[in-house]
Amino acid sequence: MTLTLTLPPKVTPRAFARLAEINATTGAAKALRIAVDGGGCSGFQYDIRLDDPAADDLVLESDGQKVVVDSVSLPFLADAVIDFTEELIGARFTIANPNATSSCGCGTSFSM
Image 1 (cartoon, helix red, strand yellow):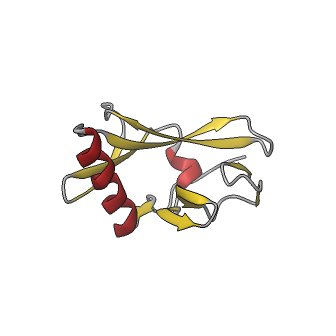
Image 2 (cartoon, rainbow, N blue to C red; image 1 turned 135 degrees about the vertical axis):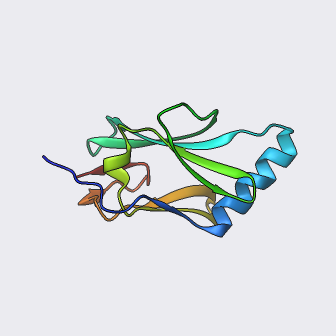
């Protein structure tokens, strides 16, 4: 499988706003790391966590908030949209990934 990065992922204002709320509550200034790991019930899974940026990360920034993607995960997230949603079942960061051919009901596992 050959992946070509056409456009970097995008982050919605709602996701940046939620990250700002988290950082204000914790008193930290962490970035939101979005990574893709092998595993999960569909072959790949998202790893979403607070972290410090690394030297080779793509940094997406708005109003002092940072979302970072490592260079290995970047091709898997081409043209993806990182958002934050609040539903009856809970609130979470989500990824709408046009490269995923299918995804699991958990929302964190996908295949390509």
